[in-house]
View (cartoon, rainbow, N blue to C red):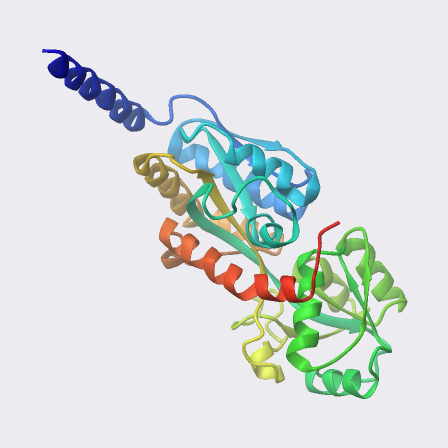
Length: 323
């Protein structure tokens, strides 16, 4: 009889769990964004959150939880109840780079469930206008002929732009000085002024200066051209094939979140990214939505693991630590 009662209680609780999953969401959802409000990262999150409401029937409220290169907010999400009501907006910085550069209390892979890849901003190789070369092959040749003479501006030690510079030097066999700034906006200002020689920078940050003729551009670090600037060659076309890197964003939930809830959240994202108006708004801020085949939880998991396999060895061999 005792065993029968235990079985009945267990079945009842399981039924409640299923019902809760089926009723999801029944109240507002919080999307933790671990970087400051107003950034391109934050703008993407807010666009996605607002559009998800149409499908879910509940508000998705963005909460900016900043600090320690995004690890404070990401850590809060890792410790949240796995019920689908706390989402973690992140990307290559929070869920790849921080895992190798910071002493964090969570595992960027094991403590989260992937939901979907969202959008990406491409990186451009650019230089001051006075740089005496006009294409990527000649830039690499000039750097080799002038070791340690050039300065590369970055958005800060441990940033994606810093890591891109380290990878560029290793890939091309060139040597130059890295100059960290408090954000890429300050670095691009000095590039325009000619105080530093070149950058590997986010396209939304540098494209306005390219179009104004204030700086030179050599290539986009992607397989395809930028829709906003199709005249810029890809690295494949410019002479550095396969040298790809981007500032991608995605959505995760805490480990243990039911698969039915993850499926519901993923469906809301797929629906959002299929909206032409949504894709147009993303394009306005320099973001490209991922294609449908890469919007699955499985695709995000594979993408994240591939990025870790590619970038962690570079970080560790160069002993890069975030500041």
